[in-house]
Image 1 (cartoon, rainbow, N blue to C red):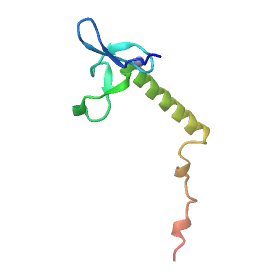
Image 2 (cartoon, rainbow, N blue to C red):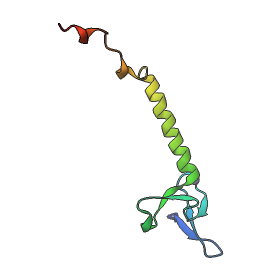
Image 3 (cartoon, rainbow, N blue to C red):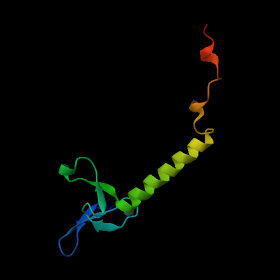
Image 4 (cartoon, rainbow, N blue to C red):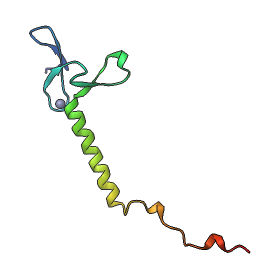
Length: 89
Ligand SMILES: [Zn+2]
């Protein structure tokens, strides 16, 4: 059984990182991966930027769908019946 490494060196000695989603190798730097956690620790996200962005877009679209499915937007903005506050005197 082989465990697949997440990082490797290319023939020029540059560190590469494998995206956990698309499975492609990309240079392990912030141009291709978002940093995960505090930048000074130098940790990189396990997915490349393209996959991460696609994921985020998908989640946002799903969320938008759920909102429209759960009824009209802005129900909390329902207007109160007019005149109820002016009954004084
Ligand atoms: Zn990817």
